[in-house]
Image (tube, rainbow, N blue to C red):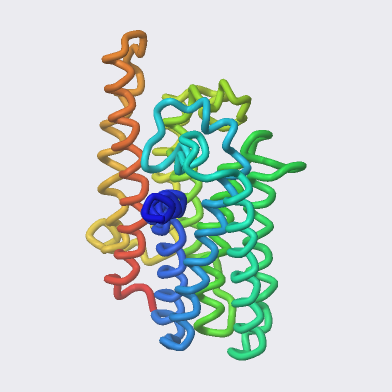
Length: 306
């Protein structure tokens, strides 16, 4: 029993919850700063939604991707799945049933928001979120193999989830002033998450940006997107004093990412070189997450966002 509980905890990948928690926090923060709207009676069921949606994503993504995960000999905390299927700890049927229960909970929460909390669009928005994972991982679309998986992931965590949280708290929708830059940061993060798996994804026939143009060029494009995101934020907010503004905080990990890029140009012919590149890739990916955290912190600290 203890081994089974440990296996389910491993399958749940608690660390990956940050991918949903951050955009939901951002949406609620914007609702508060722009409209003065915040209620713990809304925040608590949103936390339940985050938990259920997270389980749906990790369980069904593992279930749909287990053949490719078996070919990945170098999984990381960000990629390669939970490993419960390649290691024989759980069965595909276990994860499919658990994911189905999670999506039932997600849609049930949508009904609660719609009928009990007077948020009539919530069920549709929750349903859109479940569709995005289906389109990402599951045939016939399966866009993480066909191409466009990074954009689909960013649409979910960069646009849909912040809109869900904003709408749930304020009962209205926000404009793109602060969400478009965040979306571009999330496209960059989605690309960065695939960098460590480039070789395994090629072997599995996945079509990601890294498999198409190479790891180093994909890393360069990731930094480019981050820079463009900050420029958009610069021009859509008050440019005066922007350099010293908290909104400029995401530029710090972007600068570090720029200095890490030469590591991707090094030869990877020896095992030592491959290990070094994997280490730098992990750090590079961590910086993209830090960028998202600092983006939200910058909005929280800025007196321009109101």
